[in-house]
Image (cartoon, helix red, strand yellow):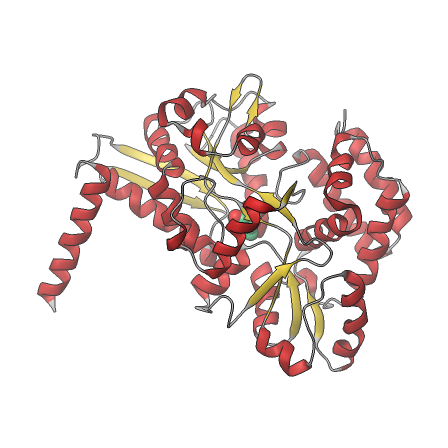
Length: 419
Ligand code: GAL
């Protein structure tokens, strides 16, 4: 047994050597603090990256600084305090798009990474549209580690069969089957804490508006008070009637658990839910759990991308650059994403390493129309997002669609959306 362990250790060591050239890395020492919200059961994919980093740079002490809370609700606030207080971590998680550009790039707190993209040949392996999300005229500002999909409906095939229903392809279909489920004591649609309501809202908006008009909201060419935009809130209110009353107290994982445990029929969540169900719960995609595009959004992939940047004044700059090199590499990406439920942001990833869910997501990413997520930082800056969370809280209590639409119009103007 001991001999086998030794042999396995030697083989792993040899593989790492082959992959990375030297056993002792390139002489980096000291520490590396990486900051993210991938804590607890969101952690395994990040840990796989840290393990690779530690194998490459054994003399660097990696500090995995996490702040729990889905979609970064708490982490972003802590990061803000640290960044403004001159206590930047070496590298931090930030969504590609306006969360990066409209917040930290605008504040002139990030280093331009164009040179790293050129040195690593990344301008050829990341899709041009994604690089645009990471860039301004002045530079490229972070390194993407994945592509996640926001508009996914999750369910358990065996439960649907038991209840004699099919996954709805439109919200009308959902609203037709929901009352009977509710009468049986089954929650038609599991919901979690407030940011997950924002998450559901963007899928509903995409269904009502389609990808062009969704984008038009952010370009400023479609008003938040237009009849279509008001219709989003109307439909959203109807759907909320079929969600659980204790939503505000549940994490996104607990909302997923409701579906897995047969207490709820469906959940709309990003495909980190696939990571959770496969990696943490050990379920098999396609048999134990299944998915479809959220109702009314077939053929559209609402995307978001987690990335890491290099803040100005990072205390361990060289170690952080080595971290970014790993994140953008094929090895790093293909170690992280199969565990995370996301797909690689690179166009040359090895799909044989990915499960059935991710392979289908990779196909959709190639073929679908692309829309950007609001809740996960693509289309609007953090100022708007924070205000939108307030509008959502108001709506969850008032259920007043007109009022929510007018409030969105006001916060869009305040935060420079579409200007
Ligand atoms: C998203 C993030 C995902 C996942 C999710 C739940 O904002 O992009 O990687 O962590 O939040 O926390």
